[in-house]
Image (cartoon, rainbow over all chains, first blue to last red; front, side, top):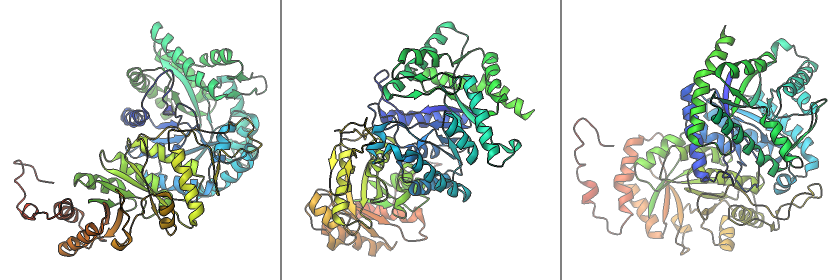
Length: 324
Length: 258
């Protein structure tokens, strides 16, 4: 399995004020630490026009990490493709891939906030056609040496579309395991409908809320940082719609319930317990795990400690399994 | 007058580090390919601590709010060292001026509500019913006001209407009594000729001159010439050359001077 940390969104929030320039410096330092500990990936996240400066431009942020590392991959999780000119984006991403020795992963998603579309002069009604046109351009670029494309989606149609087009998905940390399992099947259907064999499918990815600890107080704090990190999605008005038997999580209208349910996705406990739960993801074809550690409220000393602990206590055993 | 360095494409980090080591005030990224200038500027920024990073941004290729967001990230990565060189490219003066206005408003600390000849921000499109009538581009830049310079065919006209500095390519193009008057010139590597060149620019009133190094130049030798002979020459009137022509002090035993 491959391991990463995310989502870096570079915020200065009401709950945890920070200087933006410091957040960008800290990210470079986390990246250097991660690289030294053997992590494979760092994932970034995008929103626009939010008070906390949620990172609105992922390629410059990715460039800042790639410029100070040698091996670590950097993924956009997700860059909101309909809001960009795809020709320019393809050229900038290709340049960044070239500068970094091919270490950029270009994850793209649709976006959902009216204000973000309007601020970029794009009608929300046009988001799907713009996404599809953008994908065509990025796919042509990928065939000519551009960065690999990833997709972000949590509903049946877009997940199937990703499979059909042959792009791996990075699932949200808010998706419980059973929902990930359902969507992996949907993605595989798309992959096969695209005329491919399951034997040749790429590894998929998932963000996971996780905190390796056997200390009760630390576990309580970590779960509260996860809670706080989802409060911002209530502010952003995010909703995770229902899929089949899996319920909707409406962060805007049923804030407390949605947040409480999402906190329950958090993997906590001993190294053995974390490994056991991550093996369940491995078993359904998810071989990229991005630990969702950049939590609102978590102090740097705790984050660095957790990054080290997971690298030492969890990653080697799961890597051994693949090697074996 | 102060000297800066034009960064060759693909070598931005190494050259920016070299420019900083030699005490130049700034570097210019994206002169070869303005499409990827912000990548270049980021690489120059993370390799340095002090130099100002001038980023050439071609107008007319992307929504200006997207460009403003990218510039704001750059300014936070380098902690307020960004200068924008807006290249009008193919645009006429009116759309170029409008795009520069959107960029500057978006990078200010106020919300933006702009309606000009080329751009309306926010767009107010019917399908985006939940969008408000103004937006705030975040994060804000690290510095209070990001400096904007202009280049390209429409730059002189945009400069006249906006009051922004225009990057001069010839000393004769200067002549506006602004506190900042940037220029760009290629040096030859010949000390006598290059002294005359920078002196001519200084006499014409340039305040910040970016120099292009000659192709294939020995970087250490040429940059030593720049920092030891050209930069002091234009930092004060009537520079006494005895200081730049005197022997360099001995290094600490076992080490070498830069």
